[in-house]
Length: 101
Image 1 (tube, rainbow, N blue to C red):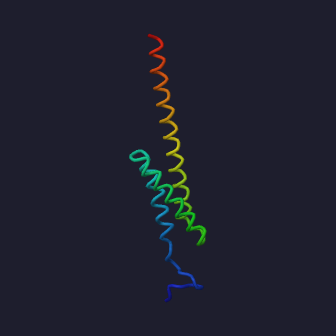
Image 2 (cartoon, helix red, strand yellow):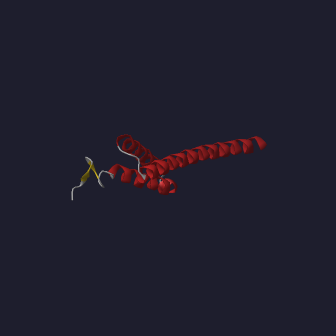
Image 3 (spheres, rainbow, N blue to C red):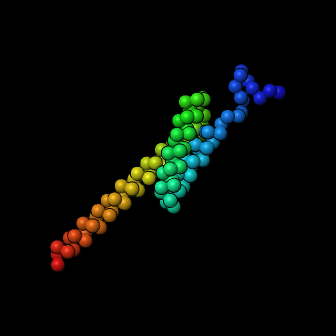
């Protein structure tokens, strides 16, 4: 039996989709441990999913990689915004305590 059906591989060539899915899941898992690594893996997973979808037919793994990567990137942005707001609030609280004295 041949590996090719109608000139295309039957089960091969899904490496980009698998890598995208793994990196997307890793970006969600790593967001609490190392946000910068999670952000980078989310970006790489997003790029791999887009490249796979552009060159091949869409499959479940590439969709999962795309969605998980987007979620990981959004979580990173939310954490950074909350950190900035928290630091601003702490700086504002310190300034208010100096004014009260």
